[in-house]
Length: 386
Image (cartoon, rainbow, N blue to C red; front, side):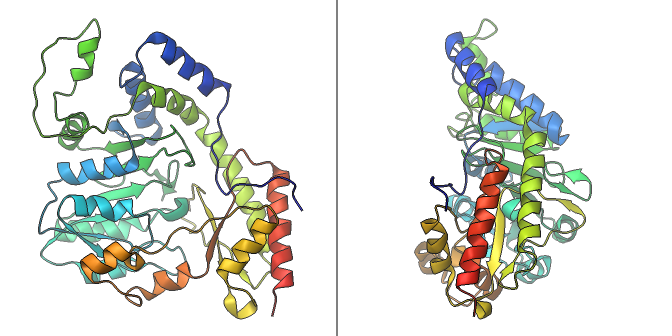
């Protein structure tokens, strides 16, 4: 058994990030400024997008996309029940109604056939979530959106570097929003990025992220600036700082290397569990590049004498940390009370939730760490086999 606890997720930072942050601190410019702008340029180049807007979080980015897209009271936004609460919370913040559509049993992503069933005259947008790093079926989703004149905002919190049919996630839909939270594939501690090909939407979101004041107002503290600015919209405090961008610049430079490591470790897991009927490994579509933010296994309760909670606890006792992504939105008290959801509304998402476990997967792990996880999982399965 391992002597030290292996957390389920962790950042991977090096001297490049430390030195860049120190340089930023020494410069005296620590809020949004030239390094944020540089990070935006580099990220736009990486995903081949015309516009990239750095923000304080993916949640902030999703909110700005809804505001800029004029989503408001009386409107409906279709999304998945199998996501983090922020995806739906931002819809509620706009006075709109989140409409949930069940997921596919193989990829755990939102099912386009279920989306079609949820479209009404009040539907204004779709927010597909690329769960774990595997892109949704975007051709089908975009076809639905085009048919009904809907905005598509991709929640790519897990999907930096993912590809769909040889297109990198970031330019497929009207707006895409990425997360740079501490444990994401690319981290700035806290932070996010919005990408879009729509110049008008981009400019509005740039202005909205900083109180609604003119988009170059940050320059007023530089030798190129002026004391004068104008408030154009009632905006928000959603900007990224240069301290965060300092991390992002070097994290982005390492992204392809990180993705290669994640892919290799995911393959090690899949190969190691292939012979276990008690565990279903992730189903990856041939036309996608999985970003492998998460490696989610699905337990077959018919072959095990323990439930998911006991499985997680057994691994914890072997110093292997795990997590669950996610508790379906409709099972949370707020959404049950506010929108009348109840258990049984989304049977596929519920069945998945009862059985899923996210195993440790991140570049800071060593192959020995991966082997420790494999041994622990196989041991727990062997001890709990019916």
